[in-house]
Image 1 (cartoon, helix red, strand yellow):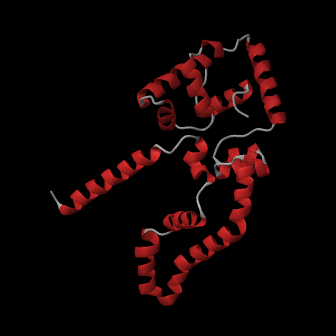
Image 2: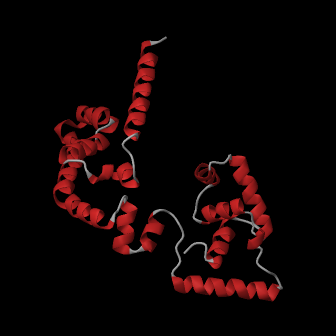
Image 3: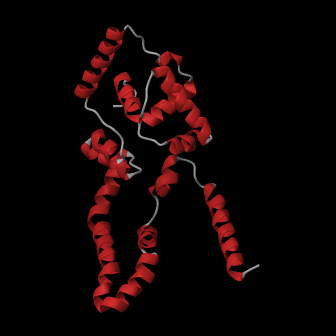
Length: 217
């Protein structure tokens, strides 16, 4: 066996083993996402360094230094200075808010600070104000009445309703399959079935239907 391959296997086994061992200490979502908010300054600094130091700041910066000289320091130095300023000025305030309101992610803070609309848009999901949603619902009901049709939502299976919800939130077929632990072909079948039952023809109509039904806001 090649030496590099052997080292890679040993490293992979070590990472998996470490993950299994540390999983014993995870008892809550807070422990999983933010280590129970118990990390000291040293560990937090190490985590930030690990996130910033990689091939881009080692091999990439070395190449820039060879080409541009000392000025290439700014490639890594700017990230370092930014991390120090963030850690000294911004992070303490965010930590206080996060602890008080039980935030885990940046999205939690964005929703707290600016409202659910900003969080939805930042994550690529559609968002409609209550006024727009009301107009869409009224229009949907009027169209059903004009065509003499009834809503076929009740014909969907529980799984089809789950798929509809996720698709309306902007998830791809592959993401839906991962979230629901299903095969991609199974999700595609559910999607085709629910579209046929609801007389929908594309993703835009799925989103619009979900808004009119109040499944997403």
